Amino acid sequence: MTRIGDIGTANIVETEKPVAYYVSLALLKKKALNPYFLKAVIHSEAAWRELWHRTLHIAFPKKINMNEIKKVLVNYPVDVEEQTAIGNFFRNLDNTIALKKQQYEQTVNIKKAMLEKMFPKKGADVPEIRFDGFAEPWEIRKLGDVVNIFSGWSPSGFEIGSDHLFIKVDDLNYTIRSQEDSQLRVKLHEKYSCIGKGCTIFPKRGAAIMTNKVRILGIDAYMDTNMMALEPVDIDAEFLFLFIARTGLYKIADTSTVPQINNKHIEPYEIKHPVSQDEQFAIADFFRSIDILIETQREELEKLQNIKKACLSKMFV
Image 1 (cartoon, rainbow, N blue to C red):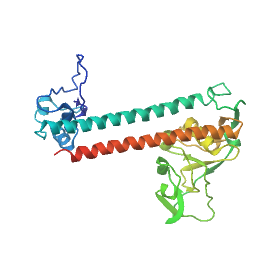
Image 2 (image 1 turned 180 degrees about the horizontal axis):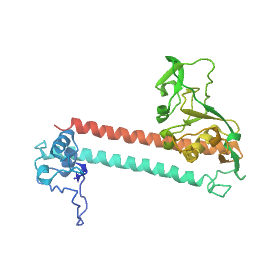
Image 3 (image 1 turned 180 degrees about the vertical axis):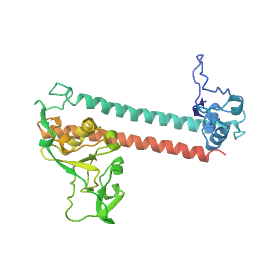
Image 4 (image 1 turned 90 degrees about the vertical axis):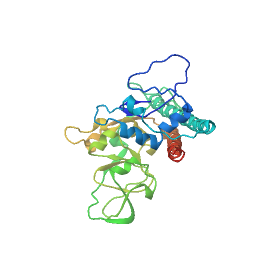
């Protein structure tokens, strides 16, 4: 069990080989408890409170001494079979979580690898991996030649609660595909232009630029003054979004004071893309499918972790 810095993370030595353990760990040799039950009970809320109260929080890094660990009280069923049943339940749940996490990480790594191989490397005009039926070299154009650029407006004084979707920088933490995807709706004057579905949106000033928060609109919307949108004109909308998300406009931002991006940075920025919009669409659709899989796996992993958390709360005294 960890006892310095991170306190109370437990695991079980399952190998027969001799192992050494570092001073930041406490070795708990079982006497009466099933080891998998012991691991689970250490992660329960009651045991966590005990460990927290006995931890030296003024130390840096914080730590719990061995003599304090020995004083930690744990409740357990006297029946060894019940201990074993509970221990095996959490053992199987941990194995399922570990497998789901591995699948999620593998998919993320596959996306990362394919982003490298399905876009031409520096100095090349074709990628390493390509869909059948496409052979033409990719072309280089200025971003200003393939998009229209829009900036947002201040919502000051607008009536909140109408049906208009108004997007702020914080909304970029989520996928924006419906009216429910933004926290703020406002009544806008007719002089303000609506940004259309399929536009790529991102922050145009502030620290959020450096986090590469980029989204594609799934619905017509308005933007606040800290936002900017690229409307595809002569390029597939999903491919444009993929290019911006992959490249990161923070690389061309003015960071001399507050990070910011404006038209003079975007218009001359070069985009390398397939001549055929069918190929652009095929590439974007491939990565959209991967993103859906990644999100599904992330949600499944989060669900399992929440199930474990709930069970740790309800299955221990």
